[in-house]
Image 1 (cartoon, rainbow, N blue to C red):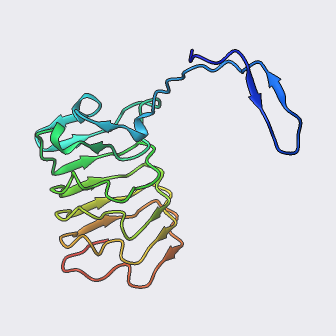
Image 2 (cartoon, rainbow, N blue to C red):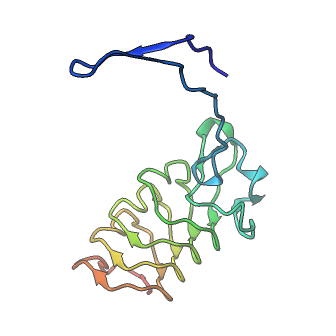
Length: 177
């Protein structure tokens, strides 16, 4: 409990002066959900085998609500495969991929993504394979895939895509949908 004065006085220019007992104030510690955690050792939450980070089968109370942000100095692994299948990820924050720059394969299937923005995949310079199947994607902004020069495969099966901006799918050599 935080120390409080015995009495509190409040004065308003129009109202009369009031003296009252202060309300009880308690310090509160809130445990943050997996969704907004910066993981020092991601392998404590997920499975890390060789160059693969797999955050699947976490159970209903441990599911990710956003892509875990790694502290660059806190891990010594280079991941080329990320599997976030079957979580509750609903958005992709700008710069979330900055510590995953060597990823070639990304599986975000079975999440709750609703839209893809121009910066949704910024930083994934080596990405070749992208699975976005079975989300709730309804719109894809123009330029969403422009920052992915090596992208060859995109899976958008089982979504609700109703709005695609002109020029969203530039024809890259070898690109498959």
